[in-house]
Image 1 (spheres, rainbow over the protein chains, first blue to last red):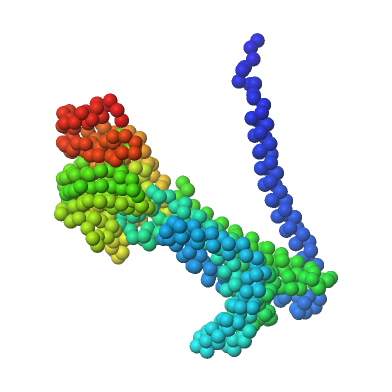
Image 2: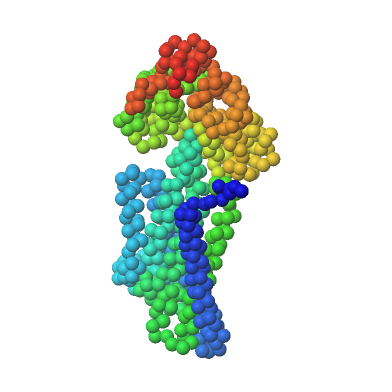
Length: 310
Length: 259
């Protein structure tokens, strides 16, 4: 009887394979377990606040009356941050990847990455102590000349500690995230497509429109979502910059509040149902972030056929 | 709408490195001219100077003159963008824009030069260009599908359609069939034969049989050794290059003794 020589395997290589696939599997499961654990904690701790009688919740009108204004405040701050940061970040990224001379580009890329390394409390201090003061004349101007638009209605805050200032500080904080990711993506545009555009007689900007931006689109969306994640969750900078209050349409008056800052400011002294209320607010923030990410995924996959991946 | 190209004393550099030295060549209108030679001899580099794509690379530059019917491409104040609308290019690997449909790929260059084009005119141009590239029958029912879904040979013909849609004077092809299978290669070669009725075609190829099949005139480039500049060795009718070459190096190359 002969044995099939192909059945004898070389043990060492297979063992390495198994160890690696096991480790990768464990890491993947760990992520799911942590996410599930956090979600479970939030839900369990939030239930008392959600089911409590309305008058026990801060404000006396129940949880949803309490959370709605700060959800809106959170979204306003994040939207201001993204509206300011996205065009600037894409512009800076394109400058670094396609316009700047190579030496300047690497220096500039380094500086942008450094911006991301500054702790948020420093941004907060800068926003509260410097930016708010310097920017309040501009708010007066807005109130005088554009005051008929509800979001610029006067009188402007004398201290400048408004939701618009908070949004501007947030935009500086998310700028490096969007810039670095976009830059990496723009640099990966296939040379082949760039040359195809140039050979058709495209100027540099037309080449970017034709080859670089469409190719980078899913990446830009992901970068914006990561920036949005930071803007939604940012606590310290908002807590320091914003002089919070009730929901206000005007961006240049004091008022408004974000979920993250609300939790941070109130948690240390909270007890009883107040703790549950704040955790429920955290759950709402978690759900918003999850929803935003799912929408981003959906936008990206909607255009899969034209993504160039096939 | 085809013009002749005259190249005078052209030196091509990458930084300080002289890649192609002292080329003088006269390319006839409405003909197919093939560039052959061993790898690294500078034939592709030289081709890219004919539509100023060479200078896209950092540090790359050119000395000398390239005249399109007497107008110097490298004259002062000449915009490379204008040059490239006159001289179309097809690349080694098919490169339709992956984010665009087949139709938008064909119109990509036209929309750059002439932003406003009516839908009727656009439809007519798409059909004319795709017919001109022998691709119309294969794609007419799926013009809105992405160009990247086509086979390699179809993609390359789509790139040719995109190039001829802007009605250039000259079409440059940089080893257009090297990534294609034999049947697709045949389709592209047939197309090259038809294109020369209207356009001046310049093709770089590694494949000597291809040069013999498609070209009217052939230029042989060679390199003396690594680090030395490439040179134009011989330029003559294709039949004489292959049957009765004037230079020893040409004879050695076309008979397969090196390269």
